[in-house]
Length: 400
Ligand SMILES: C[S@@+](CC[C@H](N)C(=O)[O-])C[C@H]1O[C@@H](n2cnc3c(N)ncnc32)[C@H](O)[C@@H]1O
Image 1 (cartoon, rainbow, N blue to C red):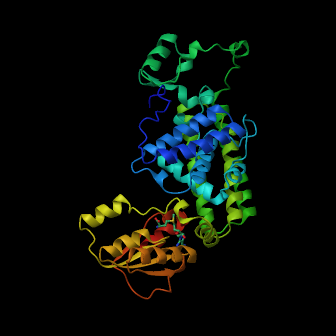
Image 2: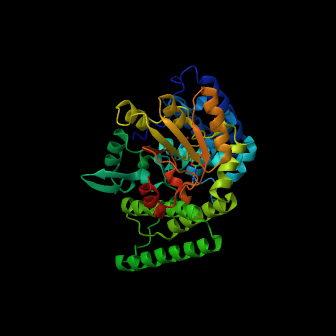
Image 3: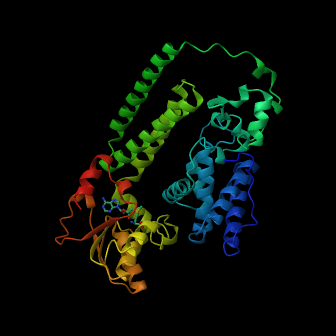
């Protein structure tokens, strides 16, 4: 990544998406002016440009307010806007009402945006410029095969790294306040740190267990939390590797808070059926992030290569039925199954509107599907597996 190339160009926004781009940036600008600052506004504009330039751009679908809200939440999340020690500080859930968007819609939109661009916390591309200096990952550069903190290297090396676009500015050029010049305390010996490391990790797991026991989440939600914890711990490991900083207590504390927030949100959401019902019945269908007419490339390639011929097909977790309808339009005999009756009402209307015959059935795919007596030659799901508890996935997949 070229760290110097952080500005964005609006000149390459296709003309058909420009009005939507302008409507969204007007909203994010106004929000940032009211609650945040110009730097946030600029970063939101940059993300909007990236979305507008995507091929095909997802911006054409859904309300500008939902996009603006998702964009602000994404940039806020990436920059820890909800950390009370930050300035500006704002709870992420306080963003939604400002745009008149439901919390679940905004969460889903932000998650979709983060997936599209691989946006994580500490991601250099999406860190506010004023925070770049605090982000240790920005300054890790390979010199003669060794990963070093370029801020500790000679000015000459810093210049070379800057010229190669590896760092956003030459650290030696930035005046350091006198306090920063004070000598740092000596690092503790490595064996003491290792002991701390295990103790800290143990403490983290213990706290998480207490949290989960109290929350008493159903299996599918536990799966989501367990995946998230795996991911967060991998993130911490990567940070340790790249920064060689073994002080993991503050990192784990921050991760614990994230797990805590996720658990709170999941407790509030209720069962997967309630959650999906809420989304499908309350969100305009154009704003449901995964409701995309265009079938996924992987499916199209499979069909176009003739690897699967028209046959009796089951679309598991079919949502609004887009891909079952696509297959049915090619002569497949499709049954779509979903846990949400509201999703299937939309799927029925969708099929009717497109003049395609499909059968839709309300069922929980983890319940053994007693509702279905037939057998199928092709079982298909898209974006369903992440709703299934990891330990149940093998069992679920082997049933088909
Ligand atoms: C992310 S959406 C994907 C929908 C659709 N496959 C698509 O790509 O547009 C996941 C779908 O799985 C459904 N779902 C989740 N858990 C389910 C379960 N246990 N049984 C049946 N459907 C489920 C949800 O209601 C939702 O419609």
